Length: 120
Image (cartoon, rainbow, N blue to C red; front, side):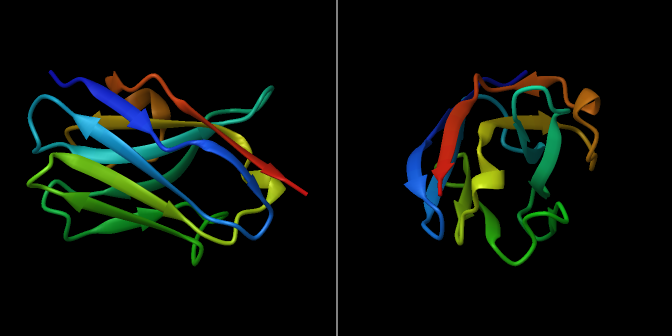
């Protein structure tokens, strides 16, 4: 059981950057993922990181622009988002599971979400 809280969302112009953070209050040994969901769209896998932090994974739409990282001492997972595009506008969610998954229904633990809006 873990409690997850996202922060760092906001409004940014295209080409700008934001850094999201996910704070976990329970175990730190979970695989952590970031997902996003725009209105009327299916929840999309953005990035994931192994419990050790040694393996990272990215959705095709964000490869080369976003970086996921883990700070074990703080029990947090971060998502650095660079070169943002209007298509990145969505609610971003942090999630935890016991294995690698890109399908959102495989994640039992979720944060409340944080809004990211990228203007043209």
